[in-house]
Image 1 (cartoon, one colour):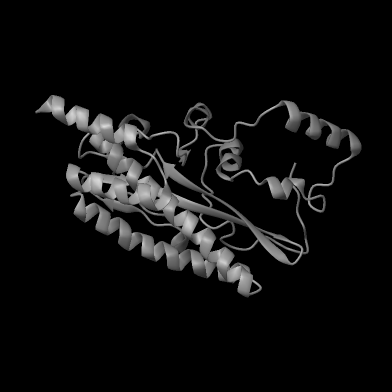
Image 2: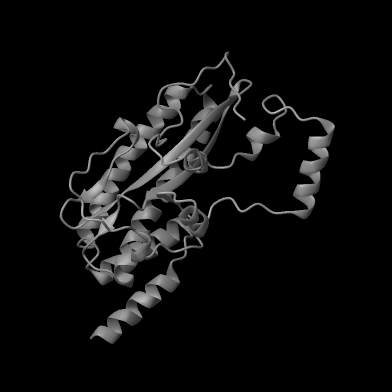
Length: 255
C-alpha cells in the first residue's frame, strides 16, 4: 500500500541517490532503508487496535532480517547493501566486460572507475522525510554488482580493494549524516540544505577515492592496502581483519 500526502509532494531527486531503473517493484522497495521512526509515527501510518497488538507481539517475539547479501541475491537485486559483518568477494560482482557505461542520476551519483581495469560502482542513498517541523533522514550505502567489475585480480587482494572502496562510501555516508545533524541543530534545515551537504560531501569523497586508487596502485600494492585498512579501522571501527589475513596468506602461498 502506498501513502501520499498532497500537502508535501515528492521533490525531484528525493530520495537522493535513488535508482529508478530496477527489474521489479520488490527491488525498488528493497533499496530504501527500513525507517522505524517513519512506521512508528502515528501521523503517517495510523494503526487500529488489532494492528497495534500484532506489532507489539512481533516486536516481543519475532525478529526482522532487513538486508543481507543472500537475500539481495535471491531477490535478483543488482544492489548489495553495505554490511560491516559481511565481506564482499570478487565472485559477488558479475564482472562483465563493459561495452558502454553511462552514469545515471546526475549530481546525485558518480562512478569511480578505470575503464580498462575496474569499476566499483557504489552509491549513497539518503531518504529524508518531513515529520511535523523537522526532517528525519534514513540512509544506506549500496554497491551495484551488475555494473561493477575488477580485472586487476580475482583473489583476496581484489576483495580487500573492493571492500575498502565500499567502506569509503560508507564512511562518507556517516559523515553526511553527522554534518546534517550538526547543521540542523543550528538551523531549520530544508531539503535544499540536505541536497547541498550531500553534493559537497560527494565531491570530497571523489577526491579521496582517487587518492586511495593512486596510493594502492589500483589494488596491487599490498602495503598500501594494509595502510588504508588501518586508517579506515581507526576512523570507523570497520573490521576487515579476516579479509586482510586471508590476503596475506594467499600471497605467502603464491611466493
